Amino acid sequence: MKVVILAGGRGTRLGEETMIRPKPMVELGNKPILWHIMKYYSSFGLTEFVICLGYKGYMIKEFFSNYFLHTSDVTINLKNNSTVIHNSVAEPWQITLVETGESTLTGGRLRRVRNYVGDEDFCMTYGDGLSDVDLDALLAFHRAHGKRATVTAVSPAARFGAMALDGERVAVFQEKPAETNDFINGGFFVLSPQVLDLVEGDNVMWEQEPMEALAAQGELAAFRHHGFWHPMDMLRDKIHLDGLWADGTAPWKRW
Image: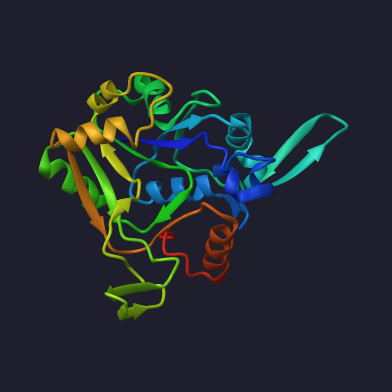
């Protein structure tokens, strides 16, 4: 099964980090978040990737084209123009890097990789979010319900304190509850290629007309995930995720 990753966004809320690189190339530890996402899928045996490029996409191409240089010790002999790679680290990945347009919206990016996903169901997620979702259970759930699309539904921790009001009286107060009652789109989709027929052009947001149409048709199922899920939207998110990785407590590290 192929894995499509949306990796074309600018990530303007990450400030200086994304002025010089695309958002999926922002590093956690010393590896791009895109690498962490791919390692997670790979740990479930999903090793064939289609990456939707956009803003500064050449940097993603360069990273994987020179993967051994980025991850290994090397000896470079300038006299005879030779390079020896030591302790090379290989991944069992096949990666298709597709230019999907710098300003194309999420639905348009998916439409542009239609020829690369084939006729079988495929996974899809965003290049800026990490989770410990059980992908085996997700795939089993998708195959069992028979609908065209599955989205992982998550209930993220609140950023602010919550209050329940009874008139002017505060009936309940809870400071930053660990989980809210509302579910949101957490990415980690499983999709039939047929859903791409709902995308009419580059200026279509996957999260709007296509997902709304699938829901209205009864063709969108939600896989509820109550474990770890965290996007990297802002600098504080990067700092938090970086800290988990540095402490050796990153929930997504299962390799």
